[in-house]
Amino acid sequence: MTLPRDDTLFPQEALRPQFRQLPNVFYSDVAPEAVGEDPILVHVNRAILPRIGLSPEAADTVSFIEVMAGHRLVAGAEPYAAVYAGHQFGHFVPQLGDGRAVTIAEGETDGQPWELQLKGAGRTPYSRFGDGRAVLRSVLREYLCSEHMAALGIPTTRALSVIASREGVHRETLEPGAVMGRLAPSHIRFGHFEYFHHRGETGRVRELADHVLAHHYPALKDRKNPYAALFEEVTARTAKLIAQWQAAGFAHGVMNTDNMSILGLTIDYGPFGFLDLYDPSFICNHSDEMGRYTFSHQPGIAFWNLKALAVAFTSLVPMEELSAALESYGPAFDAAWIGEIRRKLGLEVEEEGDFELAASFLKILEETKADYTNSWRSLGYFLRGEEGAPSAAPLEGSEWVAAWQARLEREEAGRDEIAARLDVANPRYVLRNWVAETAIRAVEDDFNLGRLDEIFRIITSPFDPHEGNEDLAAPPSAEMCGLSVSCSS
Image (tube, rainbow, N blue to C red):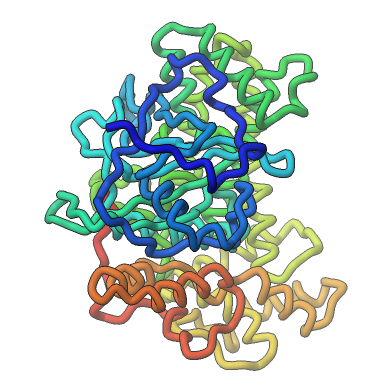
């Protein structure tokens, strides 16, 4: 079926091909499947609409729903699905690709490039044995978490919309289906480079690298070896990203190379999880039977993935330069991590003993099985003499508190100023699995879009108080403990 085109929604001056400028060996022409006969808008992220040249009011139009449901194509844009490879759980798969994502438009707004994808809009040439669909629960999880991560200051793809298809999708059971609008400057992954390298198509590797440099790293084009500079920058961005994950207590769950962004973004939210009690051995994906993507393994896995990317760059960069860049990963991660932790401790002045101070605090959290997020948040409460957050680590009278307070005295700030620093470094709320499940149940069971919107507002302003919703900052209740999350999530 040929889909009609909509020429009313997107201003034509905002549309501009990016990835589609590459030859079609990098992608396949494919249109969305127009899933469902009567789709309904579940939620829209109005604040981000200007990023793609739309007004917030555009979401109130029939055109918006039809385009974001895959029922109409964007006039002036040609949809496609990209091909890539990847190491999945350490094993190389020579061809993957956008199996349930279709890029429906590309453009530039205020000099910033963007790609708009529909996730769950049907089969593509890379769906393999899948149906190309998405279930509502997985769409809601990614929608909420990508915007929550942005609110935490962690680089991420962004969420634009959730459309319920009103059709059932078969997973373990028959579940309601949905389509998500996803936005990023680029969705290029490590696996894009791996695909062409392992096929021996080194010219395509260079072509792709040139594209990335031109569109996303233009400042590197004049370097002596821009490809080496590109790999160094990707290494640095990845180190910083993973440090931010670790500091926030975020576990991705599926750190395959096809889920690693060349821009250093968090991409492809599946069985993610935020720590409740502090447990370095936390595994958020029940499909990860060997614990490859354990929370504490994430920094090492990112390094492993960078080594896989380095192999794909060997036709562009001498191995000694790639090795030197890889050696910078560990120091870059350590510097970024301790920088994040200093903020969480209320510190601005750097001192040698800060790492030991942080490690001692984490040891207390582990030994007391304290809540990770609330223990950090309680530091500000403690300085003000207020009651701590639920299930936080015991602080009063401990040797660690005495050492921390002695350290604070060497800061050029008073207690009130440091407490204010702590409040903007340590969120009240994170998207715990039970909170995400609460949003999912509100929509699936009761179609309570008001409750979804309320949770969306809370997790997109996670440092602020939200009267009447203090329970969402608490660890899970007994009946919500141990929620099982899989790759289909």
